Image (cartoon, rainbow over all chains, first blue to last red; front, side):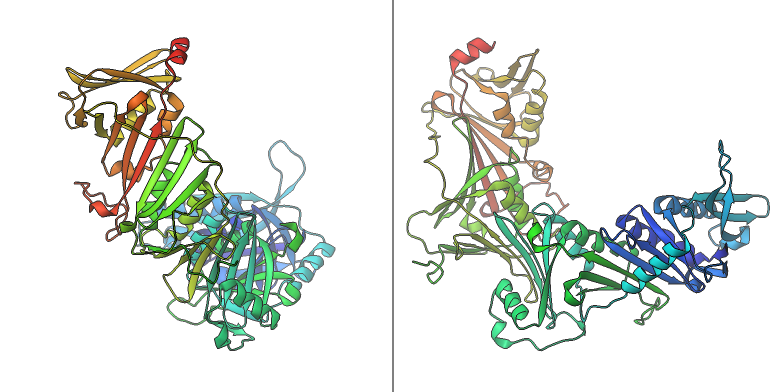
Length: 324
Length: 301
């Protein structure tokens, strides 16, 4: 089982400044799943609890000279503490910044950043332990950072992970584009004080309706006329003057909308993916209301074209309506 | 029977939600606190009280609202959870952006309805359950102690700081006003004693007004005195206004603060050095603190 690659400058920046801060909010530990073509960070796909997130990168988005081999069809997976990974990358960037003049590319002073899977003897132990090692070689010095990882997953576990990943690709039939991620995040942040469970309704007309109800208060936000991807329908003019609540109820009765209950905490976490600075976000409810999906879209810098080498999406578990 | 077909008692619109949040936060001295809202053609009064010790009133005059349509007979009163109401208003206040909030009472199920009116395609709303207020509130009727009022006005920040400092001796705080030389003394006795003097001649920029024709002294429970200043948001304290304290008949203490509810034409961080706002854009806050019964003070000290 071998893995060795060089992280590109773009790759380091993308991970350190955008992706890892966002993924860290999903949970401290994630699986890193490496295949011949992709590197994928997965949260909670095997446990089935909590919010699931999948951040998938084509190898070219992060690496060059990417080499992987394993007896399991060149697939390797292990779990890794994201805060340690983040810290290692941050310190490498600091070393770059301190050693290089601002106008010199890091390569000029330091060699490229190599990342590889190793087994080492940790201090005071005679059990070799797996690490993900980051190594930068300069003309005079070398810096090595070892990030401890779990034992690589067994063939059966990798297969299970792959199945869970395939399952997590199921798309909602209707997706609505979220207006201003930051203001929505602000709003949900303040809603957290009011209750734990939130109803999320999405209609084919492009309506997104969030609602919380307790014995003392009903609180909601309705966003209308959002951009719709997938199945859409024309809004009924007679619904225009109704309250948000009745409008949603009617749309659900007609089969033009779905409502699910999710944890406010999970919903807020999903919005924290804005730390990855996506260019837009879409919410949708998976068929049969099995989960609430949010898909983040990244554009190729300077264009309005989707960058297909990066994908990030989360799946929020749906709560039993009786569990309020 | 249903009131939903009739015109509501009140429909009003606000363009500075943060100002109202600040005003209501100032009277939120406990986490779980009930408030009574009283509606009239002149505005809304929010009343909070600690049974027979402390009462606070926030006056939101109709001039604070960009629209105020009052259609009720008499003065409808209803109770809400103050904490919930404030948290809810906070949701509607987006920092650095002007936002219009519509408040309506009653809703179809006697709720208090809040709705944002900023955009046709995005709407926040809240329906807060109200309750019938409990018994008639304890009488805090405030009567002047004589022909010349016994009062002084002090910078809110200085008052807050003085009261914060008196936490150390704790328990009971004696407030003394004396005409010659004109001064105010706050004195705490408990674990130790601490005395804070405001002298009118020495601190004229601190003690901005003073009226007193005879020496008077009353004691107040520290925790109630503290409630009158401890929750004023720092943004309001920075406005650098004065707070007016008046001692009425029987030693009843009235503490008055002003909170600006001006429309935000400038970023919120800006502090107007003169602290001047149109009088119509001010929320008035009054606290009434009952003095300790003389016998009790005797026992305590």
